[in-house]
Length: 409
Ligand code: NAP
Ligand code: MG
Image (cartoon, rainbow, N blue to C red; front, side, top):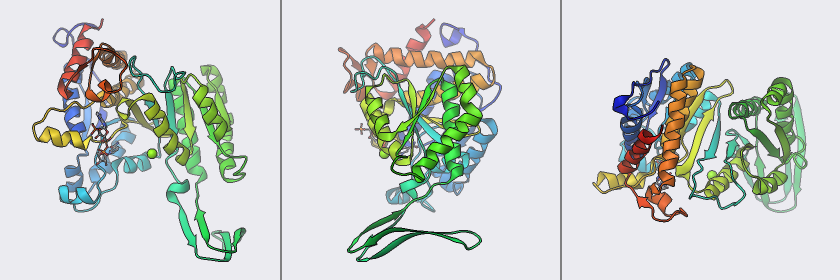
């Protein structure tokens, strides 16, 4: 495959991608990417769901559930960033209800784990000099402190942890006997959610041929965190050990503090699975050390192998308001382009459609080369070590990628 769109026969698809359109600036980029970078080259087959806030509101958010079901049916989806409504959006969009986060709805429907990895280009160097390859962060997205119950203890008294089984029997432990005011917190997780998380991580490691690291604080939390460690190990031994050996990759468990120390000295090129809180904190550390949210890929993987690709950033509201006023924007479309390439490549792999998978590789190469040649959006121009850069507006950056794409053999 080489040359310009006009000279090429369009690539055919056998199975549709589930296309989830979104909001604001990313919705504008979505359309430009399709028109400039996809439709000229691919006979694009998608099942389209409009998750734009207006349409979610019109359908009482049914469209979000429908799109999640479609993702389950076809196995691969690509999602544009969407608004999660808050009080301000209630008035702005005259909403019937404060609809839930679409990402939350889809994640719950697919029971999935989110994997995030930086897109590495020359000229945008990570702050951690030895990070040569991406570090993919996998965050467990259920329970722990995110579903906690808290009490502000007013004064002296005894705090107990009580579990009442369905048959009425009790397990009771003393937490602490207070002699004065203090605080209390109850958290939980379920074996089922932890097992799904483990399987998503093992599958993704096999898929991307990368080692998997997992860490908790099991030496201190001898039941709670130890349960995470045990479930991972049991599933690994029973279902994945041989496949990992065949693929030449490794599952590595260590303590969370040891993991943090090792990550800082590592070269990258592995997946780091984290409990919910660790993942929240560490993903912000890893992504900011690598450069920017606009240069991160993000994919939701369900334990039974459904993939939903998206950008890690939001709808870039501030740029959208500029755009509405007719002002020029320089919004980085890389993460949204990679959402498409991720989905197209996966579709290509599942359908044995080599042309489609190669197209995705080539479009990613074109994107990286465009930036490395000094053509980039403003956010990258501010952090690059390259000299003589050209700052392009949103549309011209996408057009520059198309030019590079056409020039690639
Ligand atoms: P945001 O869209 O991530 O943008 C925050 C700021 O980060 C922007 O104002 C911009 O900085 C910079 N930025 C982010 N992406 C960029 C890009 N592609 N190119 C250039 N700069 C970029 O977060 P937000 O403005 O706080 O949230 C807007 C909406 O997005 C909210 O309604 C929220 O609910 C939603 N959201 C959706 C998702 C999702 O669907 N995955 C995730 C997060 C947030 P400057 O303004 O300094 O240029
Ligand atoms: Mg965070």
